[in-house]
Image (tube, rainbow, N blue to C red; front, side, top):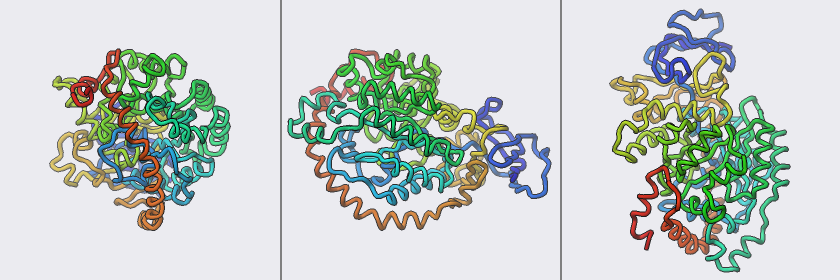
Length: 513
């Protein structure tokens, strides 16, 4: 089956054209782009679907390089909490029961629908199920993404250290009876995680030709050294992403010094687990030497500007990362820490946030750099650089067609600026994944959105009531974690941070009191 986009404006994000708009015929044959040629030069064959390209723009699909679908059930629930206190409520330590598989399926479909309608053709879903993940629950996530038609990399996120051992000062401040309650349910062993992942790889990796299983230790401080090393070896064996949370908060920066006498990146580097397969989610509290190590290893950073702002986590040193040659991707993070999976929101936030970190406007990110992170950077971070992220012959036909007659593009100036600063997804006419139309005129073609949302609304009250009881159980930890947050914020780290976050935090006298 062939589709011909005739005489359409193209932003290809490929090696030849970059972000520079041009006009072309784009031929899609099956699931791949077959040809980009001068306007009017591609011959139409009988049976071809032809789309008139006048007043239309086609771009690669957006790539969400860091997402937690679990949190979609807590959209709009929390505010004004730093990460460590927010997690007590969104990922309770005590009192949770596994979610019904039907609720997991609907939750994932909702994330897929929102993503596709906003021009996202590929996601990395770092799947976390509290209190623990089963293969059946993970299979439900894969089922939903397959049904929706999106490209997805899905993890088996793992924490295999007791929670109180993952945060500095916790065992010192928490009452012994609370520590005992946490330790009563031991985390999985390294071998149990490896066994789980091997079976997940067998069942789910390369499913439907567009779904992959991802190796995802939650964070260096949350996993044992042997798991971090063994997980990296498994990701090498299967050429899959090694996805890990690193240096999201000041607390985590202090964690590296308290636990390892090093930065968390330095610790990972010493273990030999940094490579071109590594994607570090967040990477806010990085030192110059951390950035050098990431560049040397070929690792990626998944930058989550909206989530980082909502949780007050800090500002990643984007310019230093880019100048050092570190691959940067963009992510929405979870549906509770950013409250949506809309990547156009993320793109605009990424472009704006870093303009306030320096008065040197020549250092501010360009629209091209941000679009690159949202497409090519995301593809590289997910081991998909030869498959998606650009429009070029041989690549997958993952693309978005925009109507240029909308308010967002009127009057028509630099289309790159329109995409970054004006577009919100409302100009999207079609979204294709693997050459198949998955969104047409704002409607997902493979999933009935109204039915998904109606069933979720029916199930939500009982689930949220149960979750509310778990929140109450876990509020007992809050005063102790508030003290940990305050204590870590007041620490003057004996390292040279790359971003401006340290000065801003320490300037607040209340945190140093």
